[in-house]
Length: 144
Image (tube, rainbow, N blue to C red; front, side, top):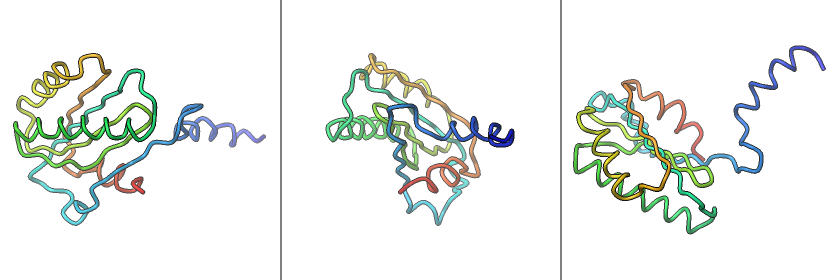
């Protein structure tokens, strides 16, 4: 094998699912494409939740969707937001929201997850994304 092939192999492995896992499933709200990026929503909120001891299947998808709906409702009680999409892989679901500002978002979402899903592994990330790169470059192209 040529040296150039050896250099590419580690890069390609980054995009392969872990051994025994299915490839991630991307869902994006395609209706947002015409108006993206929306300057009124310059911040990206990414919530990630892993259900412990889950068994992949239809029941898991319903559970993940129900939790995501509840989290979205909680966020909407705090501020106006746009759910851009989600990535699901096995027992883990990552949701992407665009928000107008970040005041109190982390505290409210952490409290929501702690009060309702304290045994679940979770993370919350907030960052500026005025160009909506996460939606346009990650979610939208990968959604099937």
